[in-house]
Length: 199
Image (cartoon, rainbow, N blue to C red):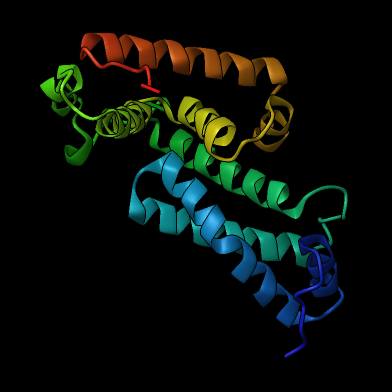
């Protein structure tokens, strides 16, 4: 097998279009973990995440073979945009109004632990607990809001990049972030969760 380590993702995509099937194997190996993590974070369901992941790569192969990819930007953005569209299509089909219900293992009732108020705890423990609570609060957000929070804070993308990847305007991305933060603050207040990290 040819060594593709020095090739960019974009070059590999073009090589695959040109008939080098093994270039796609390298593309898949490089991108599968990051893409699956993104999908799983948005959908919060392993079965659905696997379905979306597989459908994404089927669409990627189809689009590459049909010549619908041009080296005009980062391949990973293009890949994530396809996954995003599939996720949103699934939510529309399920008529869920993009509201994600908390599952048994992330029930918000479990978040009102007194440990957050115990001033005798080590700062490290408190900070760990706060970050855990933030993840639980994010789980309860609608998918579009959770997605923008994930892309901004976990993937460190700009709002312009988020807008491009999700196919919306920058203002819509900013609005989703604003509503996500409002919702998280509201839920934190309802459940008496401290969201300030100790130094």
